[in-house]
Structures are given as structure tokens and as C-alpha cells.
Image (cartoon, rainbow, N blue to C red):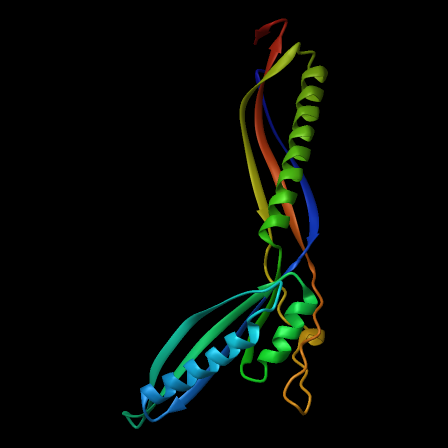
Amino acid sequence: MRQVSFSVESAAKIDQDLIEASLYFETQRLEAADAAAEVNDKMAEALKLLEGRKGLEYSTLAYQTYPVYEKSEIEGWRVRQVLQVSGQDKTAVTDALSALQKTLSIQSLNFVVSRGARDETNAQLTKDVLDKFKQRAQLIATTMDAASYEITNIQINTQGSNQPEYPRAEMMMARDSSGGAGPALEAGKSEIVVSANATIELVFDGKRR
């Protein structure tokens, strides 16, 4: 036997440390220009509320304008825009959402793994899986009475669910009479798996066979 193929893997569960929220404002007016003006005013107000807040990243996106029909006739125009807010500081995000709910509505609230945490975990898991590869390869060579082995092929693969946790009961937006307390936030975990698929060639007494 010359070649042996095998696989090893290493996995870890890590905290979803980044909160991503999407908020929107939508209005309908007879004239498209009036609807657009109202949306622009509300978004400007929302952006002003976020100015100077630390630990947050935010941007506007998904600006939509479309007609509203009644019996094949345009009876008005609807305009909608989304504001995305993200951050790792739970208090900063909660406070921001509380303030923004006075102007905007929350569309979604997600927890994901930040790029920094994912990259750090991937790096550590890659080291772990390569250590496992070397141990397995050496075990195979020793068991088969080979002098050594050579790597014919090795592929490193990363899998990880970064699916956001959508609002559960404890995350739903609670409002008070004044217009909106922030949501209660509770993050989950994501699993990252790094695997190595390898083929080695055994060397017997300095020769392959």
C-alpha cells in the first residue's frame, strides 16, 4: 500500500458577539416627492440621534419607491428606506434602538459572529487540525512499519454556521407609553469546524512501495 487517505477535524462553539439591527421608515403620500421628503426627514432625524454614539456602525440602504394602485390607477406613492445599525456593545446597541424606535420600526435583529472572532477561531482550529493530521499520519506510518511518509495532497476546509438568531420571545421589542424601551438582547453561539482531507504516501526503508 502506497497511499492512505484520511480526514481529521476540529470544532469550536463561539459567542455571537456582533448585533446587527435593521430599522425602517415607510410612508405613503399622493405625490412621490412628498413621500420621499418625509422619508428623508425621518432618516436625517435618525442619523442625528446616532451621531456621537460610540461602539456603533451604521449606514442607510434599500431605498425603495413604488406606486400604489387602486383599480389599475395610481392613487399614491410609497417610499421606504432601511437603516442598518451594528455593534458589539450590547448596552450601546440597546440604547440606540430605544432612541430610534421613536422614529423608526425594527425590521430585524440578528446575532452573528464578528469577523475578528471568526478569523481568530479559524486560525486556532487550523493549527489544531494540522496537529491532528500529523499525529494521525505518524500513527498510520508507524502502524504500517513505514520509515516515514510524504504528503501527497492536503485540503483545509472551513465550515461554520453564522446564521443569525432571529428575535426570540425575550428579544421582542417592548414598548412603553412614551414610545419605546429597547429590546432585551440575548446572544447565542455558532459552531465553526475546520477539517483536513489528506492523502499521504508511505515510505519504507527510504523507498516508496
